[in-house]
Image (cartoon, rainbow, N blue to C red; front, side, top):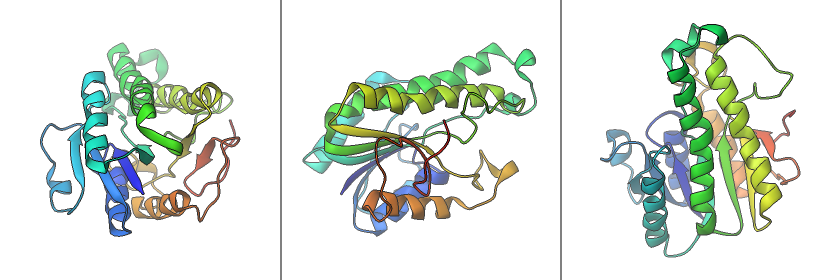
Length: 226
């Protein structure tokens, strides 16, 4: 399959690039950097391209690069790009820096829309777009920790549902990746990013069936509560 991973420099994104490539898929890896990161430089046969999700023109340029690389449309896109800014770990919502709130929404929510709308025309009929979000996105699931991140990921999760209501030829999913031992999630980690990547490989390969009616899922393909 032709697979695009956005946010591929480190963590889950990097593990996805590695495992998809190892299993024979053709992989395009989008990064926020203009130059190829060292973490991706040693992986043979992949395309590495700039894809700062806050830069719509750069993302659209990435669409063209992927189309040229694949020689046809893509089967799967997984958008892992996201931020959790340091002050958001210690400030409650009433104390948050609005600049941090804006940045969180710009990357996590608006960035998810930019990626989905830009790459949608480049997806095969029946293709699938996955946006990695979070577990704490339900309207009743409220707490004080990382409020800017949580609010932005709640918005990002609904992006998939809205796209599914708008189009029928491509399926959109929001994915809770588990509490991973990555730079972003290490404080509450329960699993390694490799476990999530291995499970998402099975989802992409069809070993774990999913349906667009249950478009908010965890990394095991199980429906999440909205």
